Length: 157
Image (cartoon, rainbow, N blue to C red; front, side, top):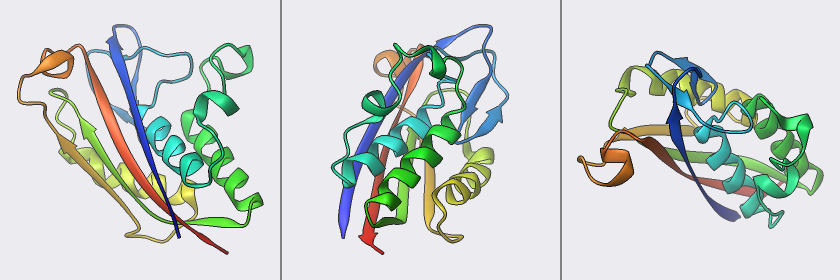
């Protein structure tokens, strides 16, 4: 068994769609980033790569590479899963926490979890997604952006 932890944060950016866990979330702004800025997919990608001791998202999909401009982050997640599979590992389960004041994400966490399970190739009920606020503190509390923490468990096989 191997455990990895991932983290990502992005500022909100007007004029972009908010994509989290592969889901379009209604909001007045999306997230700033080189790709589609799906912070959920980014944090989980880092957790998976970390568990495999395979670097991080920036190592494999650098923001200096034009091929990843506006990239679908769920595709990058699937590519990270393929990489760890090539090393003889598979994702057993994952847990994700999104920290944001707005928008309210509770109505979307189930769909995010199902989309992440599909991308990871693991069974229903193997990915948990939770939404929390920052109680008005810091850049998240001020509504300037959001952050995501993720953990993934891999095993040989």
